[in-house]
Length: 427
Image (cartoon, rainbow, N blue to C red):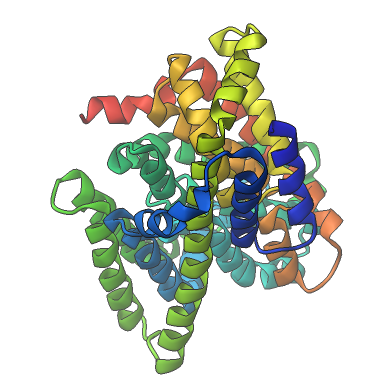
């Protein structure tokens, strides 16, 4: 059954059928060919139970928060402020790409939205100042992936929902690896530009008073992050309530910067409905597929297969890493999560690993999927913003950052405390 399901999944995706529909079709196929019971009789109850969760209400709130910040012009001010602080490094404005992506990752919760925001603001600067298009665009694509690691993260909310684990603890666990990845991205940029200075473009310095004045444009984003995350860990709000507070805060910031208009609100609400509908269709379809897989015995079959390999816990987790890297070439990140979590996570727990730690490791691995062809969404988002050149340039530029993510994955395996230090310290 494992082979049939894998071939069916890849085949349906190759036909460009929407992922949510693919998951339902696979569920119907498993019911028809591998189950002795009419599993579709439980479809109505499954759809209701998968969508009737207060936790999932946080998703449209966080999407709306990001939409408001993107469409109100706050991104342009943030980028200009960070340009004044980091463009003196080898690589110049490339570091502003990564730093801006990190800032917006701390509010938007979406990698694609983060990459689109930074790409729209940064690309005109690359052409004007003569930066290498490969490195410049690759850094934006990679920086955007931080949106699903640094809290608040929509993917971590979905992981917590599917595994019934603590979302606040997942947010805490993602903070150090997320910021660590941002620093590692900047470090690899410095190394590349020291070896090849022609790739980094112009290094610029600004008068210190001008740098200090620029900090004013960073304060609202930092305050918004503190308001969202701080209210969760202070016990004042659940993640869903904090998301609602964040939307109110984002609206006030946009209002203060003069970015509120009827057109902005319409576009923000329309974008929120589209993105949330896509996410919920995938989550509900995955819930039904997982129900049929479990009922047909795939979990037992996969467990027996893995046990038959006789792997140690370390060997097992390395096989899981390879599995996610390979699947990430072909399957969109959220889909990859929801399809594999119910099968892989129980096996990971049997090996003695922590569910919070594995969630962060999984996020790093699916971050790689965002910048690896042929389904790397961030690659297409950045290429769309470039309006010139070809996709191969973005792929090549993202390669060093992809390898950096792989290093972070191995660091998490070797030193689990990178992810677990904050959750354990603040229990």
